[in-house]
Image (cartoon, rainbow, N blue to C red; front, side, top):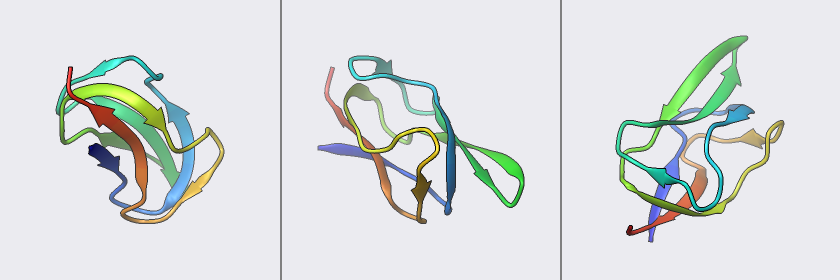
Length: 72
């Protein structure tokens, strides 16, 4: 199963995708707020969002999985 992970710790400010959406590598899928800055998180893989593991306002640590993707 493919995963999208965060590269840094922070609060999830905005989720730009929903379950069932198609995502391409390089798409901005989540925006984190860290150190009073907005940090865009891009998917490194393509696929369809199968499961979101986060909610807006939740806190994530570096390398946490944000969502699972399955092949289109």
